[in-house]
Length: 538
Image 1 (spheres, rainbow, N blue to C red):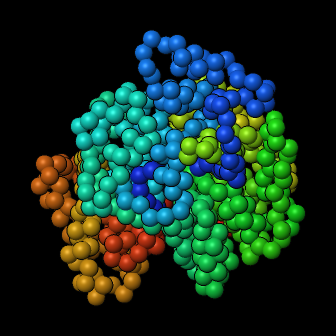
Image 2: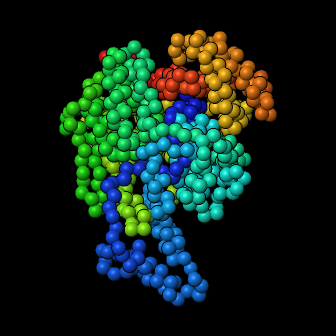
């Protein structure tokens, strides 16, 4: 049971792509084209150039040395936007394509979503199924060095990050991570890979009448993938569902509302938006859903943001689903993308998302962007009682009169706190160096045919406990060849976590991504809690 939470912080539970500079779980409104203007700072509302524009012009005409006005302007824009909120952003022309790619194609790289906070690369999320997730990089990590080159405090931009971390499949890159609570930098060796950007990691029958669907983001194809999975499970006899949105940073609004529509009766409110210059806009269910009345559980955690929170909040507020896990990230700002003639773009926050009960999804950010990201992961060990004591917590009522909590993010109905039991220095070392990933890949490659011959499917492989001793012995010997030696106490403490991790990775390499989740979920506290709750629902 304790394995579940550890495996969450060591994400290897999910599946997707490469290194690119995506901004956390954003919802971007349709792009507008900004026509020619005297300066990027020109104020069309006032009809005249403002003070910033005048300063730029004075520097251009009067300053003692020649300066690059375009570079100066872009730095000024970034500085201005940093004073607004964590998600308004300026995207240079050189980066726009890469930033827009995250929900659309196949890429080669290390597989993280990042943001640059106070001149430091901060990991927002390790992309589901990607190489970074495989070695144990997690949200909140700060990349200080890449291949011995210092990248903190040097003015690095998105393009600079992408240039250093993207690369040909099979090549390796070393990243030095500063992690909260760790006194020294952690070295990760990551093998770049190419992974298609599928939104649905798994859809399988976790029990005879219970289906499980894992969604890693809300992209262009998410709704179709979800429907295909839902139809497959219903054909297999599913009448109860676990929808897993943990680690899902968000994406497109329409993908979220379309999915929520499948669970809600006609005219039920899904979400609404409102801003100073934007009237309220309401999104309602159409009543054409395929799963409107059957028992439903939604799983969330601190990595669930934006579109994930819209779905979870809508189903919670409408008393349609039980929400289990940990408090979600709290990203509820709507950005509108404005593209400029030079190929750059501005993503400006124009409104906020609100759940049907009126809860703002957005977590407070008045204490600065860095604190904003740190606080998102500070409640890993919290329970509902401690969260209720927080100053930001506000009480709301669902349509059925149940109490739910606002103040940023979605607070689950049942909270399963983070647990570090089973973690040892040996385990941390082998994970950070990618040894479990390398060993599992090599093991699967070496024994693929014999495994397929011995086991009719991955479920039979998971049930076989006799093979676990062999796997563990081989792995300990493998780690020793990399100068990482464990004592007997460490092996006893971490063996269960190691075996779950390696068996799931081996199963993924031999069978499928679904096999990975089948094995991981067998020892997942949050999933097991969901199954227990569903037992009592007819």
